Amino acid sequence: MAACKKTTTAAKAEDKVTVKFEINLEGAIADEAIYLVGNTKEIGNWDVTKAKALKKNKAGIYASTGIKFEKGTVVEFKICKAQSWDTVEKTVEGTELTNHTFTACCDQTVTIDVYRFN
Image (cartoon, rainbow, N blue to C red; front, side):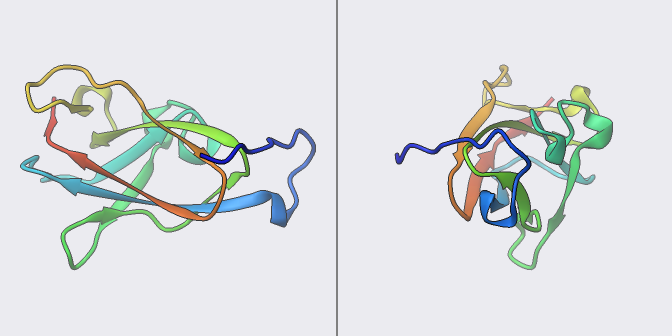
């Protein structure tokens, strides 16, 4: 993976990258909205009441519109059903998952599979 330099001054437009998120529900039933929550202000600073809502598209995938992050930002996130930690994603066996993590180096789409919620 290419190294990214995180800028520390006010970000210019060229210092931002656009990230789209696509969430496949593999057996997990989503009878409510699906939310993306994580460690940056763009996705709620771990406050589920400020989490980013995802919309279901025609293919049945929950997706975000492009979210702008400062280039080089290490992004950590989880998926919740409803805006509650009581409905956070789990492994197939129902155990805790570690945070999903990536570095926002370029315009990209981040795709993950969710198998189960609390």
